[in-house]
Amino acid sequence: MTRRFLAIRPSDEAAPLNVFPSVDRMMRDMMRVFGDFTSDVGYPADAERVLAVPRADFYRKDGKVFAEFELPGVDPSKVDLNVFEDRLELKAEKCDEKSVEQGDVLRCERYFGSVSRSIQFPVEVDPDSAKASFKNGVLTVEVAERAQTERMKKVAIES
Image 1: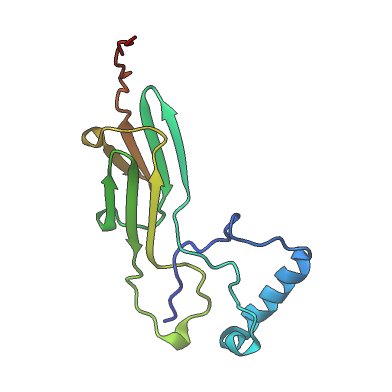
Image 2: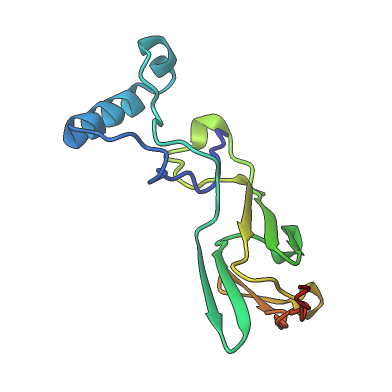
């Protein structure tokens, strides 16, 4: 069975300005029809391919930082989550556990494989306070902000 990578999407930042988006989209669609021949043509079938990263929402509320990741079809036991004082690192794997003969496949649109994401927190957090829950394909991570004490030193002025 042919495998595809998980959650491949266009990158808003990495994509160059496209003056003729409809022509480009038509060209990509035509190349997808030809499948394996695209490497010979010189126009990649998946021009929008970038590293697979799960989509997420990040927000602050009541002295905590929240991150919600879309991980549909991912087994929570296959998720590796690490929280540091300045960042969060997520790695997950979506496996296809069914076996179907290549000739029996009518259409394959779902993606399988590994994804990863690393985000910097806008403030320093307390990694020991991190909690995570997984519900309906959404991983929610909650981390308390570290209290920022204002540091000051009284400086004597010499004359």
